[in-house]
Length: 203
Image (cartoon, rainbow, N blue to C red; front, side):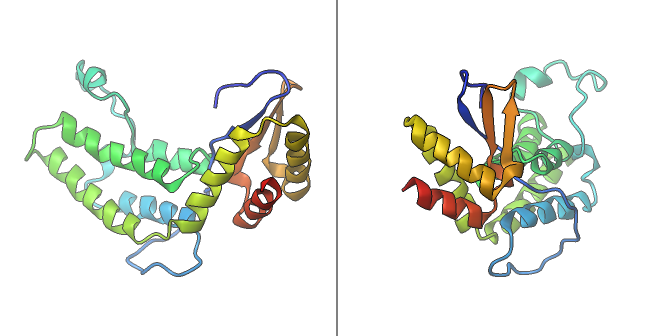
């Protein structure tokens, strides 16, 4: 979100995830944290053979690929994706998936079909899709998006002030004051229970 006007409350597009863990081919467990499962997918992919070239941004200057930035408009790599997840960047699981897919789609777009890089990217994309499909996207995805959308539509200053007070009480870590003027609610730091309470307050 771009900085708002004086006194404006801004919903910051963030999603919490910071701990690394082992991942395997375990089936999804009901009630598990889908964002933790996203971490597990990254960890799983980072451990696969041939993934090294996808861990960091493409250094197109060093590789003498002057046309790379003109062809690839949204560069992405596993290292950047992992940091984004750790820094609460994503609001929805689909936001995360979009960046993950960009890693592999970029490689397939820039490299020739049948090349080693192309085939590796396709393999990792297929692997990601299979694992991502197993994640329960219901609660975390829709609740956070619903709250974010509801926050943007508030035009009653009193209601907005009441919401800020409630967030401050329920989850002070999610509040951020910039320049003494703009209050940012870091949605990624709100757990599911808090979001439900806030949504009930807004209804």
